[in-house]
Length: 273
Image (cartoon, rainbow, N blue to C red):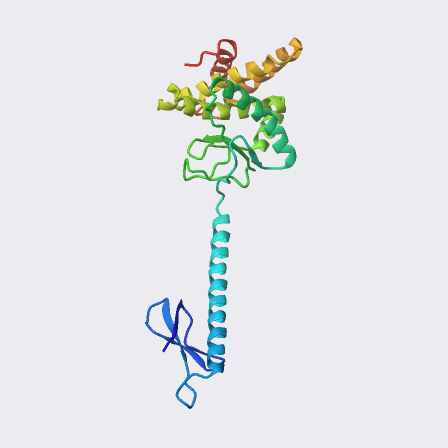
């Protein structure tokens, strides 16, 4: 008799206007039939029709509210696990405004250099992350807590506080240390773009030192923009100190002297493979 059927988990309940909900099946998510009472004359009066429309609206509103709550719970659950945030290629996300501006300046120089050599090169996204927060990428199950590039996500996870700590401990120039980290990670994205020999090697040190070499190429181009030769000399010296120091922080990257040699090879000759 024109009963309205909806999907719900609601138990049997009586509504205003003479309607009641009864389970049609014993399943967890059951169908309920909204069955109007007949009036004494055997038909449906105007009140019944109005009540039926009101009830349909009430049930629809109820279902929308339930769906919205489920979606909200799903979002809340997803937020519990650090994941990669979306961003436009070449963008810097996360961190403070000051950090984004600082990182963007160096990032932009690297992108400009590689774009000039490979016009189709697609820049990754840099996400600034705190060590405490960490980040989970598609490149592994573990939560990252050190700077790295994930090619699957085209994302560089960057942890500025690590450079702050390292610069303080090793008496390094923070600006150079941070700039080198960014250039090195960008170089990884270039390796995958050009399918360099390093990415096919089972030995990660070869891959990492190839990235050091490519970083040297990019940094040389940046130093060529400097008009003060003394500034360039100091910058090179600071970068060499940095590469020697960071060699001890990554067992998979090689020794400090090996990394410094790779950087110089890229800086002086530009031949990395």
